[in-house]
Amino acid sequence: MISIDDESAFFKNEKAKERTRRIVGFNKRYQADPNTTMTDLGEAASRALIDSMHISPDEIQCLIFVHQSPDFPHPNNACLLHGRLNLSENCACFDINLGCSGFVYALWVAYGMIESKAVKNVLLVAGDISSRSSFIENRIVNPLCSDGASATFIKYTAAENKSAFMTGTAGQSWDKIVVPAGGCAIPIQSDIADKIIYDSKQHPWLLSHSYIDGMAVFDFTTNKIPQTIKEFLHLNKIELNNIDFIALHQANKQIVSFIAQSLGVDNSKAPYDTFVNYSNLSACSVPSVINDQLYKKSADLTLFSGFGVGMSWCHALVHLKQLQNLGIHFYHENKTDNRSKLISDWTEKIKAL
Image (cartoon, rainbow, N blue to C red; front, top):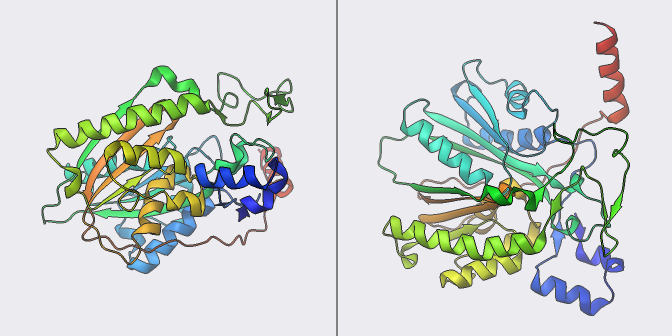
């Protein structure tokens, strides 16, 4: 855990630090240790869920893993997690490469699969290790980044349980949140591997780090998201006062507060506290609001709203009457593998071919 008080050296003075805490909501964030991967976090979340709900691995028919932090370029993390959980060979497994909108998108996919009777249940795992996509000295990106994972089990029930979804993408603005290098467009080679670029405020960047155009993202979230939520509710003939709770992606306190204000609701219904407690958890941000804010509390009709990378968004209306909420758990690293051992192991595998 990193507290804003641990980083006082990055602020001009205490007044500037407290202003940032008050307006943006920076307080605490959690970073995985260097040996931990996204599959490790996903496995820990899945096992906590499976054990608590007494789910047999054999009964899981589909595994969806939402993240932007692959253990390897391929195979996908869903296949790795399938093996670790010892799921049935008949279980469908795939990744969804989305960040802050990803959980709600994947929930839409899971509901559609169950509604179509393709499967009877889905294990939905979501999360990211975002902290490795920036230097700690980069005060634009790094203070936002928290690492985590969520696991959600969705299953068929004969009882009617209505839901609704709206998806959207402003793909023309894809370059407002992007990791420029590491894919086929700009493969990482020696000419950029250690090339540090400094912006006008002397924040350091690698081309393999997350680039965020903060003002463009702020404009997108504060204009497009309230507008599309209102359209979504209008299409479904739902009034805001009929919604028990609103789980907004925890981009930061300022953005969550602005969206809530634009919708005409206060922060008791659309809280920003999860950002204050855990910072921006990317793909598992929305379920973390539920785990954090509705643990041992009741709510039925709930609005989910995820938005971010790709300039994408997804809103959902779901009923949580039957939700079993396990709350927030903390991951404790217990791996011994490190980078040098992994490199050595794979070197030997290749030599043995």
